[in-house]
Length: 207
Image (cartoon, rainbow, N blue to C red; front, side):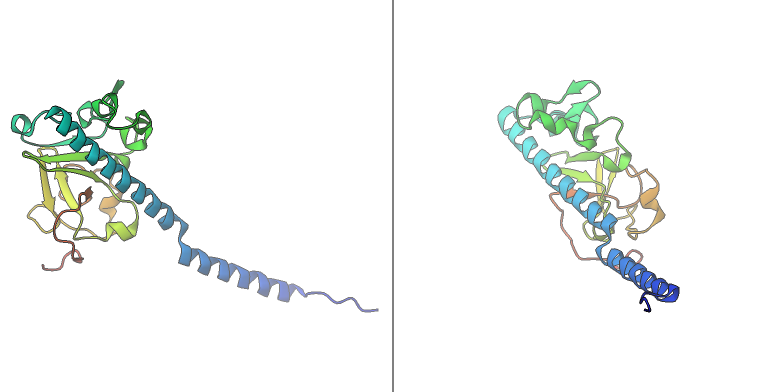
């Protein structure tokens, strides 16, 4: 009685086909990109929550955690700075002590002093009554939103990607991996609220 079975060649063909299909599925799903999109959506929501907390705080006290715009002028503050209003080195920010944000908010990665620079947040005030809370996106889909990306500087300046000294870069540009995002010439930041001009512009093209 002859026993039927697969030959080694047939098994190798099946394994190869399974491998090809697995690669195709992973390429379509791209789990890393999906995880980065989820991370960016979380940061977008957190940025909006912080921005709303600033407005509530100002409505109650007529000042921001860093002072009044007239006193300070245009300024940009990093999320690990106590003046950001959430958390600082060994301190609890006023947005939490005044209950504008829940205490658990301080445990989020942007407010950890050991956080990677890509996970920090920044608040920008234009010296009058406009605040923006910004973060560095990780998803390629968000890094390619050239019209929405901004430059921020330590001297209190926000620039659009097509302004002088603010360059739009491709989503795979090595500048995204530099770890240096703040006070550079590259448009690394998405901000809440999103500022004007949202048309996609390919880096290097004319407006």
